[in-house]
Each structure stands twice: as structure tokens, then as C-alpha cells.
Length: 390
Image (cartoon, rainbow, N blue to C red; front, side):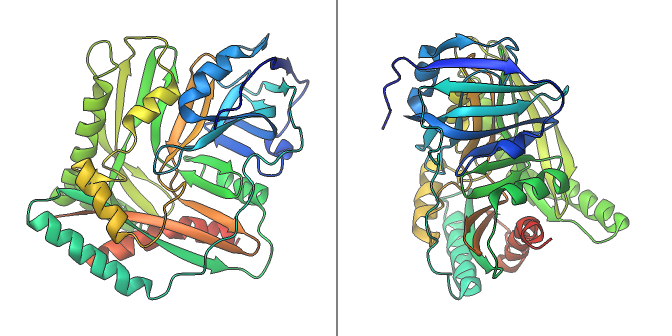
């Protein structure tokens, strides 16, 4: 439900000295840290369906002396795997540019103390997850074998209880330092560090960096090099990656002025896994198309759903034994100029008191093995398990 934005005003000012935006994260607020840029929010000026965020931002009067990507009024949040989530225009945004300039934006009238995304209790922990996973992968392989699917991304959940209260801000702080090459985010109690850029828009320039094809990292530097070479040479992983790149390029052609340019795939090494990744760039034909519009156009990619899309989504709905919620949906921000960053909400955890629910997925294609795919999800879950138990 969109809240009508009448009379909202925005004021942005530059701060003296250096500040850590994370110190300003409010209860149930939003945080984003990537490539030296960071912001955190508190309070609520408006809530809006994702489809209406651009129009609402355009109604807000005010000044922005920085006029840089991410400054001024923003719509922030996550759309969820189903692509229909609610975004928030925060009452207060504290940010820091990659160059070290710090600022605050206030938008009002607003509820300065409202929780943007109130916490919700987690369901009971799943049982016999390994057996369910094996059966799901086997069924997916049967559907691939009879031609109904080329690829489907199945997911599984894991619940941990640390016996102590978990704090979103503290978890963000650990992730932004330990997973510095990723996009660290918090959407209320959902916190993570995703390596995958879905859509970035700066003026008419658009960038996407899809990832697909995964191998667990080794314990020694030599192991990492060997495993990365295996990933680069694997026909299965290359095929899985190629499906994603072709899908992203095809969708971007709908809004691109001229060709889409792809560079890669390259092997991207993270703390527990390595991925194949390709940089895809284009220029927008219509400069009013926002980063949020591009993210909505690209989501869901075969990296988190499958091919063909309709059959993959139907298989996920049938074989995944839980609601994905925010997992694997777009997460990020868009400003009033249409610039923004949207990542795929991966490597995340939903916090509830002392408990956390983690989710990880794996792409199932011809030749997949249930045990190997389980091991891949374990490697992905290891990021958040390590962050939760420093």
C-alpha cells in the first residue's frame, strides 16, 4: 500500500569531519555498505510499493547540495523473491561517500521513531533437511531429463541458536569488514553480504554483474588456485553461467541504447566460495528509467530462479519447503535522480532474538549431484555462520 506523499520536504547538509553511518542505524532501519560508500537510516517518512517509489520521490521538495548518487531523499529496502516488496523513504539518512564526504538527509513530516521493518518471529527449525534436499534435487533432475527444465535453483534453510541476543548493527559491522568485496545490507532484521550486483545506474550508464557457477574455496592458497582453475574449466559451471549472462543481456536490450557489452567470465574469489562473474554494461535509451526499474526488469535471473523461468518458478514453489521471503530478491536503494544500487539478497540471515535463519541455494542442471550441491550450499552458509559466531 502506497502512502500518499503530500507536503514532504527534504533537507540535506554536509557534516564536518568523519562519521560512521552505522552509528545512526535506527531500530528496524536500513543499512548499505559497498566500495567505500555507506548509509544507514532511521524512522519512516513514507512507505511505498516498489512500483510507486520513483513517483513518490519526485514529489519531495527540498535541497541537496551534494547531488551525488545516494544523497538526498531515497527509497530503500528489499523487494523479496516474489518482486513485490514494500520500500521505505526514511525520515533520516546518514551517509558517507567513497571519498569521505559525510552528510545527513532529513525528510518530514515523519515518524522519527517508527521501525521501518519490524521484526517477525521465525518459524520452527526444519527437520530432516538433508533427506528433503536430496529428494528435491533428484526430482529437479528428472524434470531436466525429460525436457521441462534446463536449470532450476533450489534453496534450503538452516536455523542456528546462539543462546544470546543477536544485534543487526553488530552483524553489519562484522560483515562490512570481513566481506569487504560484497554489498553489505540490513533490512530490519534481515542482514547479509551479497557478492552479486543486480543493477547499478549512474545517469544513463547501467552495470550488472551476474554470478553463476560456484566452487568451494580451499583452505590453502594453492587449493584456491586449483579450485578456481577447475571452475573456469568446468563445462557444467560454464553452461550454468552462460544461461544467466544471456538472460541479462536479452532483458537489457529492452532498455538499452545500442549494444550491451559483456566482459568475462572471470573467477571471483570470496571468503568461502569462488564464482564465475561477467560484467555487463549498457546505456539507457530513456534517461528516466531508474536503477529500480532496471532491477525489476532483470529480476529474477536464472542465477536465482532457472530456465525457462515459468517452469523454474513452478518447480521452486513445489520443491522448496519454505517461503523464500527476502532471500534472493533485489535489495538496495534508489535516489530521486534515478541512480541507485541493487544487489541480489544472498548470504543473509533473518534475526529473531538468539535465533537466526540462513538460506542458501544451488543451481541444478544436467549433471548435478545432490551431495555436491549440498556441499555448495554449506560453503555459502559458512559466510553467515562465521559472522554470527565471531
